[in-house]
Image 1 (cartoon, helix red, strand yellow):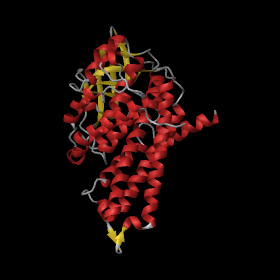
Image 2 (cartoon, helix red, strand yellow; image 1 turned 180 degrees about the vertical axis):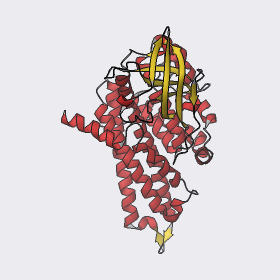
Image 3 (cartoon, rainbow, N blue to C red; image 1 turned 90 degrees about the horizontal axis):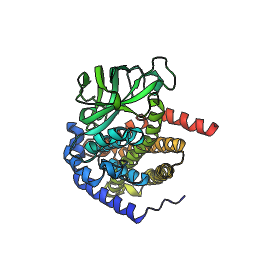
Image 4 (spheres, rainbow, N blue to C red; image 1 turned 60 degrees about the horizontal axis):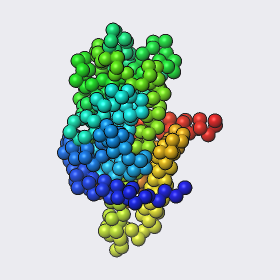
Length: 380
């Protein structure tokens, strides 16, 4: 299938690229070194629509098509992995459950707050100390008490928790277990009993805060239930399908940035009396990168197209995420190789890009989980 972009999509791509080139990329190194979230850029993203990619206009969002969303996240990844991850997690995880399953009251109350750039972002808490890929192992509980839910438990690796307006929490509402024992509940971050830990000290993506979250008799109204009680697992899986496309798009952006840096350096750097770009070993690494970047983009666009058409896309999203994330790590690794010793130095961006790319084969389903998802589709 030919994914030639429409004129509107090309204009969107240029608009987003120009914005991130001016407001995000120049601060990428500082964001990584200080760990400070780039709020000045975020504040300007609201009017542009970058904080409401899948939110309908009636709630203050942009509701762009799925390929345009991929384009936006790729450009953010090209500019700064940390900022891209925070925005992707906000759009893909922090708002998607509300958009797809939330009540009209919840949508009207919360979506405008997190899409205009004036407030904070959205977050989704899934992973626990004893439950990562195995969502059915979740122990955080939500019990009815009068007209409230009372939540107790602990989450970890919650992206955006410290900068969030609310945290959508996957909790066990039926102690009997089974596929209908989990539910999604919206918890405002100013709720008594909710404690958000300091940012985790991570290998990369240091400007995207990730925290542990604990729930100590946290009380929220019953109306904060998202969708139907007991459908949390199914809602989560549907949310993760779209989130995997976003992770693939970040990987694509990181790879593109590394490829561009390596190509420019190969033209400038001389060894043995010639530019290193004239050496076959370098040329082959650049050729592989160009090929794999193009292939990843086509896989991502195809998964996004199926999503936009309302077709099943679980397998396609897993394929796109698997290939793009592993491709991103390879391209960033080879970019460091092309830079040689300089590539290992923080003086050049490829060192940061490689560290940022490393998470993408883990977050929102490891490569191993993606292969399981793909295999189930193949064997079915």
